Each structure stands twice: as structure tokens, then as C-alpha cells.
Amino acid sequence: MSFKCGIVGLPNVGKSTTFNALTKSKNAQIANFPFCTIEPNVGIVAIPDDRLNKISIISNSKKTINSIITFVDIAGLVKGASGGEGLGNKFLSHIREVDMIVHLVRCFEDNNIQNVNATIDPLRDIEMIETELMLSDLESLEKRLDKKNKNKIKNEEEKDFINYIYNNLEKGINPSNLIKTYGKRMVKNSSLLSLKPKIVVCNVGENDIGKNNGHIDKILNKYDRDNVIEISADIERQITELNDEEAESFKSALNIKESGLDKLIKASFSTLRLNTYFTSGEKESRSWTIEQNTTAPDAAEVIHSDFKKGFIKAEVMSYEDFVKFKGEIGCKENGKYRIEGKDYVVKDGDILHFRFNT
Image (tube, rainbow, N blue to C red; front, side, top):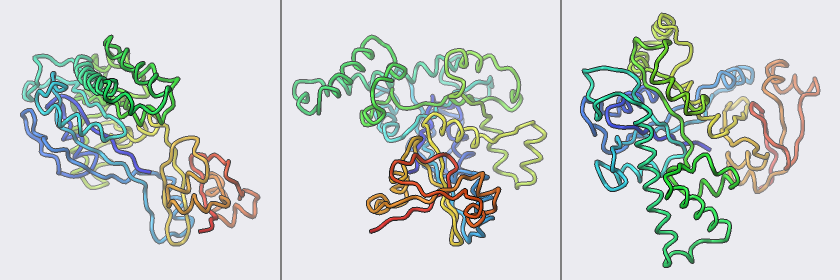
């Protein structure tokens, strides 16, 4: 599976600069005025993983293929978007298509960059967008609960779910933290914007890197630390314009240990509860993204649906054993090569070969 992250925020907070830096492209127009982005920009990025590189070397693979993440740079949102203000309806339709929201907020002062509000207040900006998402969901649920559409609700569980979310939204309560009793699939299939997993990305100025930032402190007091990361979009942009040696020297001078992309991928995997497994041989070594607690047949389906249909067994080695014993032969000689059945839950870092019958 691959997953899609929508970069959202108010106009002129650095969304397009961040998108270009993450995707190492110049596809998104950057300008010092609101609504520079109208149609969403889409970029596909290989997920870096040092483990895959080591596996590929050990297997002497001809190709190394990373799993991917898709970023979508979505037009800036303004207050009243749910009622059609700005690019409201278009924005909301684009965000409905992503798996996760990357909420970019401006956490630095700069009089040279226009701001849609008179002051810099990232908490206010987050709440403004969350309110618009909630209002959009409220309207959507009202239509579902209308007498004409009630017969389309599949069962009592779904009806209970819709009423629960609607009642919270009507009271102005964000339901995102109140849905643990409902299945993940039901939440995902609801297509409700306020229930989408979110990460808050704090965009800081070049001079603020590694320093205390009052704006970020306020966000951390309200949101889970695992769902908040700090980057400097402008610094990330500058890094992409350097060669590898220059980039490492530049990051070292600024004491930057992790790129913005690495931070975002790590937070995304944690928020979406994802794991990585590998396949490896002389032809290619490859990484695959799956949800945590995925069984072997479902992991096989990520490669091809026939792999699940005809699943027989999975040949399994851990990444640590594969590296320690220098490949498949070494794992077999040291009793670290296992055969697992349909109930096996794939672990992060597993190296798998699937036996199947078509």
C-alpha cells in the first residue's frame, strides 16, 4: 500500500515551499500572496530506509526499490470555507481524498511575508481549520440523516456511529479523540474530514532552529508530542539545492540531525500505525508498507492479489538476523529461517518470501 498526505493550512504559511522541499521539485508555485496554489500539486517520494540499502547489498540485488509516500499541496483555507469562502468547496473535496492531514502552521515572525491575520497565532490557525472541517462534516451528516437518505445507512452500528459524531459536532466538540470504541474501518469509510489522522508541522524561521519557541510550546501543551514536528521550510528548500556533501555540511553547521522528510515519515508511520516489510533477492530488494497487525496473507496481497488468493506459507527472516548472518543462507544455517502460516502477524523489518499457488 502507499499512503497520501495532504499538506493544509492557511494561505502563505509555507505549504508550497514545504511541498517542493519534501518532493525535491519546483512543481508548486511560491509567491508572497494568498491563494498562490489553486489546483493541488502532487508529488511522489521514495521513503528512505537504511535497512533496505543494507539488505540489497547483502543480496547483491540488481535493483533497490523503496516504498512510496504521496504528498498533496492543497490550496490555503480561510474562515468560512465550509460555506464556500475562498476556495472552500474545492479545498474540502481535495482533502477528502487523502489518508492523513499534514497541518502546516507558521511559527515565526516576518514582516516581509504576508499573513492573512494581523498576528501570528498557530493555535488560532489550527482551530480555524478544524472548525471548517467540522462544519463541513456536520453538513455532510445532516444529509445522511435526512429522511430521504436514512435507508442508505447499512446497519444499527453505522447509524449509532453517525448519530454519535453528529451530536458531538452539533455541540462544537471535535470528535477525533472520542471514537476509540468504533472500528478503524468504519472511521475510515466514513470519509469525515474531522476524523482523518493529523500531524501538526510547525514551520519555523532559519534563526529559530533548535531554540525555544513560544508558539510551539503552546501547541505541545495541547497536542500529542508524537503528532507535532518542527521544520524550517526555507532551510529544507535550501538543502535540496545542494549536492550531498554540501547538504551534510550545511545541516551540520545548523545542527540539523534529521531532515524534514525523515521527521514527517517517522511521525506519519506512528500516527497511521504502519510497518515496513521487505522482499529480497538477486533481481531486486524492495520495501513494502503495511498497517500494524497485518497477517501474512494480507501482507502478500500488497504485492499482488493473487498472492493472497493462493497463499500457502510465508518464509520469514528478521532484519537483524539477515544482517547478522549475512543473508538467507546464513539464516538457514543458524536456524533463523522460519516457515509461518496464515495466522502469522508480520513484524516491522521482516524479510518475507511468499509461497502461493495460482
